[in-house]
Image (cartoon, rainbow, N blue to C red; front, side, top):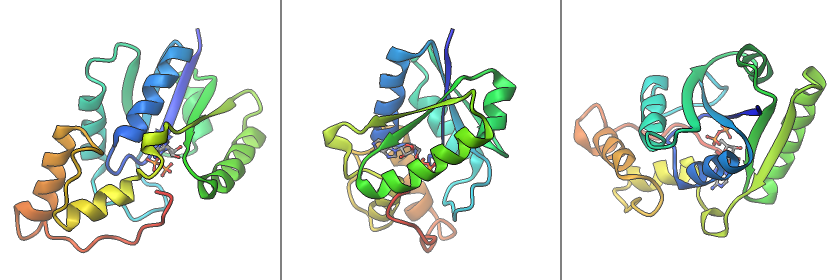
Length: 174
Ligand code: ADP
């Protein structure tokens, strides 16, 4: 039985992530969506909300589960008995970061393989930062995220005075 982990910040989860997870579920027996507790990034949504949005996105997928984690991804994989780390690649700028991270993880844990899926063409432009930015400006994100995510983003940016946050700094690859 091959268990694979798809780690990420999922801030928020979008159709690009969902596509990679479902494609990975065709190759591996079990997929664990592992939501970082505190990556070295400015995150918009709390871990609890990011985990809950992921759980709703995969509620009907028997092979896909969701959990939060902190610390090294390879340690998390060992803890749950996963042999594979799944990542997604969109553009060349993803590649350099993913390549370095994969080498570092492989150095730390040679027994864990890193498998990268090339994005589906229609998701090439899609990133959590794009979703956040469009949502913050009141734009239409319905082609990018499931409806339960749209609602949370609306509430976050336009639902209340506290919700009208200034966007945290983002990079083009998150
Ligand atoms: P991270 O902070 O680790 O980059 P993300 O939540 O941004 O976490 O992404 C998790 C994984 O999903 C990463 O491997 C990322 O490259 C991949 N990913 C993000 N957007 C897409 C997309 N549109 N198509 C395919 N893979 C994607």
